[in-house]
Length: 251
View 1 (cartoon, rainbow, N blue to C red):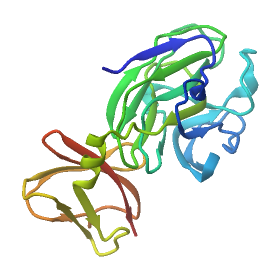
View 2: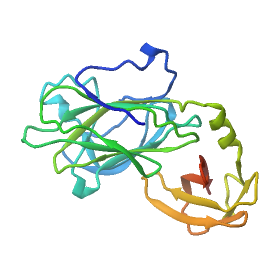
View 3: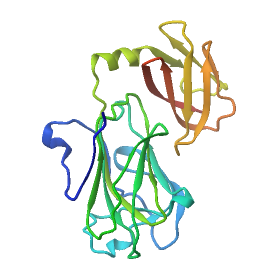
View 4: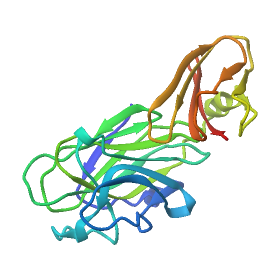
């Protein structure tokens, strides 16, 4: 069962010997001023982050102790969110620092999604201190889509997102080896998905913003992706209890 913690102190992932998979400081964000925008930037370790209706951290105006740059999510009604792909080793645990945006009263809260599936929400807060949100035991293998959405009508500042690699048990290795997908990258409007058996495969494809763009049951090998724009996608493949995620590049 997942364990969700909401703490008022910084968590060091390496303290228990957990191998870090990725992190983001938002130091390369490049947003400034009072205008909210949507776009993308290249963050730490060359990870591409996408953002919707976001701005900078407003210079830590609440003196909450923000370390350097951060990103402010506007409102849930604006679909304000940030997202990125995890990297090849998937996601085990995710943690992030949350702060209150501006001084207006009201609960702040974010919701975490992996491959479009909610992994939990942070506890409501309305203070001028650091609030840490952590979700453990996600353990989804493959290059998965991480998405953080504002779940309220109040601004939330997000900083120092980090995640560990999925715990690769024997079962995980078996699941990952069940599927193959080619050609990848593809430019001819389709990909072939082969499995170790002839069972039907449930296929869900998500764009980099977490929107599901394909949801189908594949009885053969060929998946039609001709309607997808050029870009990077997360493909979730499942047969019964066997689930894995792969990155797909469409040119």
